[in-house]
Amino acid sequence: MPYIWYAPYMSVMYATVTSKGQVTLPVELRRELGIEAGQTIGFRKEGGKAVLEPAGDVQAVRATLERAARRNGTWGTTPDPSAVWRDEVVRRHGDA
Image (cartoon, rainbow, N blue to C red; front, side, top):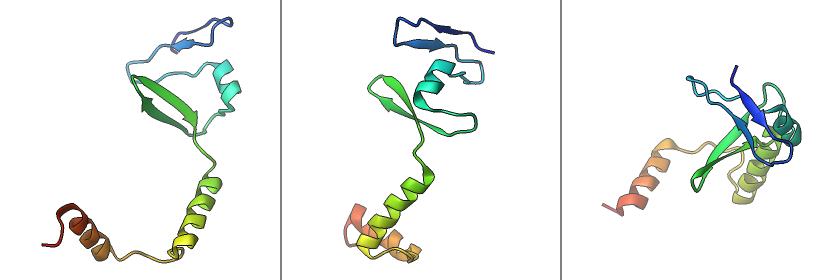
């Protein structure tokens, strides 16, 4: 188990990365972010730092995508892979 150091007077919490690249999130951080066992979290690079955040609710993401697709008139349709490929080639290289 990795060593975790936490100073309550600081907003920075430290954990050691294992040889497998694993880190145990400090319990205080999990509580503050509402991260529970088995939950998916996201990582992104921001400048020279790694930022982690709880993944959004899948149903909320689906609802957002559905609203956008309904506005575009594409909800419930299946794209033609050939047309998608053709459009991408034209976008990248112009009409050839």
